[in-house]
Image (cartoon, rainbow, N blue to C red; front, side):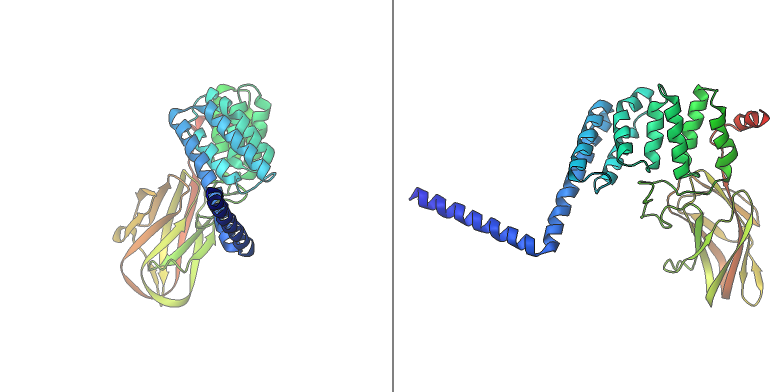
Length: 347
C-alpha cells in the first residue's frame, strides 16, 4: 500500500514537472520572466553581501566575493554580459569607502579582472590607476590617460592626476593635461555607470554639452541646444512652431559637476522685444545654487551632474510669444588652487 502511494506521489510530481517544462518550452514569456527574476535575485544577493562588507570596511572579503561573482559571470557568458553593470555597481559600492592606498590595493585584483573583461569603463581606470600608484606609476599614468580618452571632460581622472602630483612633483607633464585641457574640454559624457552605455536615466543620456528649454512647464516638448564652447557667452535662439502665452520657461541641463552657469540678456519676442529684468522675476532650480545676480544676469553653481531644471517664473503673462533668446556661459571651477597651473605655465 505504501509503495503504491509513493509511486502515485512521485508520478504526480513527475507529470507536473514535465507539464511545467513543456509549458516553459512552448511559452517564452514566463520563461523569460523566471530567468530575469533568478538573475536579478542573484545580482541583488551579491550587492547586499558586499554591502555588509562595505559597512565594516572589509575590503579583503569584498574583493574575494566580487572575484567569485566575476568568475561565475564569465562561466555564464565570456566577456561583457548581463552581470557586468551589477559587478561595476557592487565594486563602486565598496570602493566608495576606500580612503587609503591599502584599501585600493586590497581591491586591485577586482579592478584588474574588470579591465580584462573590458577596458572601456571610465571609472574602473580611475580605480586601477589609484591602486597601482604606489608601485607602478607608469601603469597608473597609462590608465589615467585612457580614462581621459574615454571622457575628456569628466573630472575624476584629473582629480587623481592632482593627487599623484601632490605626492610626486616629477609628473609635471601629467599636470599639463589638467592645466591646459580640463577647462576647455566638453568631450565625452558625464560618467555615471558603464562609460559606453552612459546612463540611460539621464535626460540627455549622460551628455554634458546639451541643454533644453520648455514653456509653461510643458515637459513633453523640449527645445534642445548644444553648448558652443566653454568660458564665453553665446546667444541661443529658441524659435517656437506656434505663438503661445508664456508666464514661465525652464532650462533643463545636466552639465558636469562644479560648473558655473551664467545667464543674461533674456528677451521674449512677440510684436516687440520684451527684455526681462531679473529683479522682477522669481528664479529657482531643482538642485543648483544661485551664486549671484544683477538685473540682467544670474549665475548658478552646479554641485553634481544630476538632471536639473532652472526655473524662470515671470512676473506676468507675455502674450503671443514666438521666440526666446538668451545668452549662456558655461565654466568649470578649479579642482586645485590656481597657483599650481600658474607655476606650470611659468615653466
